[in-house]
Picture 1 (tube, one colour):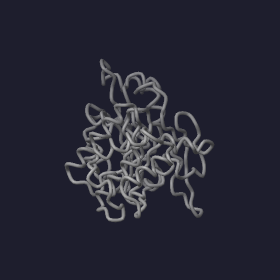
Picture 2: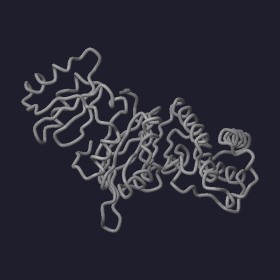
Picture 3: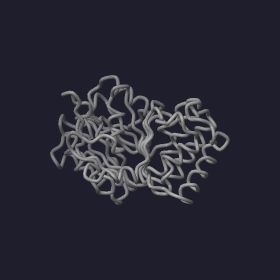
Picture 4: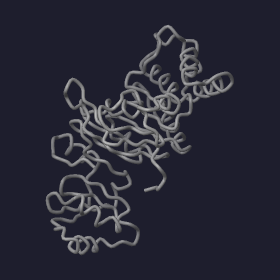
Length: 310
């Protein structure tokens, strides 16, 4: 993994509503160029997590940082550097598409030629130019979604937080969206996408995180889905095993209390895993290729199997 500092960092960020824990303490970081797919069944805490990441909600405990700055202490950074699209794009129905983008751009601090250039470029890239004078209240679901995406992208944010961005898009529009997000990530932006479509995560994202019952149950790079090993150790030994195996591994993800997924560094031998754990006093209970798919992992977690947050 890159040693670059995290663009987005959540430090034990939690949210409690009406005395109920909606989101358990969540710790993760996202670097520029990474695209994180956030998965979970309805009620898993995805929307709450996205609103914390976007600076829309303040955490009840913990903190959320953008480029090392606490958003609770500097909320203006969220306005200036984060693009957020909730599941239902919030548009003023009495404004035309162009007026909506102009108003949104001014709220983000854009003026004059910078605003008009950004607006016109997105009208073209998202196939909205023919609709520029149509009232937002008369748009279809897919058209509203594209206007919401344009608003999120208008100010060139370093962090994009998108909740079901493909809602209502036809296949051609969905592919154009993927190309747009790939280009934005290539320019150094960090992107979070929440979706119910596993195929979208596998085609667009570099990492996947799974929330279940308000807790982070799974977080791993998607490249680990191939050429990885499932390592089962003594109960409660996964954290110690991760530390022991770190010199051998390119990446390690804790899947459950006693199971890890390990992708070895180039040149590292799988036969070195058992001796390393034995020398550290960690009992190895199982070692096998980690061949299960993202769909199987999601089904295991969402189906109620216990998994340890990483």
